[in-house]
Image (cartoon, rainbow, N blue to C red; front, side):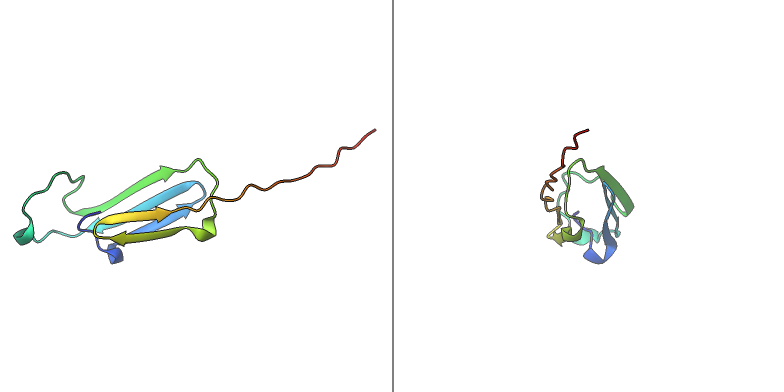
Length: 88
């Protein structure tokens, strides 16, 4: 997420889908010495990831620092249910 500011980034969880949306502003080329890889030079972007594990939606957090986005999805504790067996 190099060049993306926190104000320009949105992280949402909809059901089982983690969606990251944002915009990279036009870079100031005066300080750039070398770029190794960039998917987009500037402008809006969006990516989605379907999550196949149970997680606590209330505990989701995202942190952007030095161009690295960290999204935490805490595991949901398994729920144990005891089912009474009926006899006929």
